[in-house]
Image 1: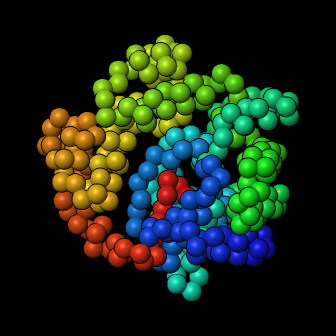
Image 2: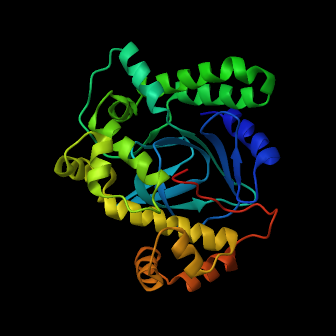
Length: 307
């Protein structure tokens, strides 16, 4: 990969990145991430995405597995899975840069049928490979298109389609194909995950989630855990805790206010489960985050999902 994509990402981030180092784009699901120093640990339940690292390096933990990747690598996440990530190499002189694209499952399904790709067995949810040349070239043209917004309505969808084609045709193809296969277990679990994300603060019986996925309760539980590494209840709990942490750190909510906002009825239970996930009780954790947070308007380290 030459420096053209890095330079284009740097130009875009210089103009559009917010205080946290994230430069969202007008192309759906596409963002540039910039960090000028190594980050702390960031907890997320990532959506299916591909992350092209352009400079610096990063580490992602999924359960007991660790994935390290650096400039020239692509990280692929094919399911809504809980990750802990950390930017490990970044500086003012050489910031960390990555390009993140959320995968369009409908587009993957459409292309898979047109390319006459067959179904594949469900594999690991996270993998790292060297970035394919065609993927990097399409990413560069996407970044250049952002600099010509008048052309976006005419060419943006076409370039996104090309990007998904090259991803399907390249090193990540088999892993991506599994999430776009029509009526696959992955697609059915994704429907239940969408409901969990939308209504995580409400009680969600497994029977309702299973019905959304079009499975029996026992089959749903088995396939959900295989896809996400969590039970539905654990998944919902992590969504609640991650959102509560955001409410406390970004909006200044108290622990009790955040707990009730995400659906907890007991502050004691919230505190216990928060500490189990993040290693510290809410007050100590948010204080530690604020001590290392940059002032408003400054460039900050950022880990967005598994970007």
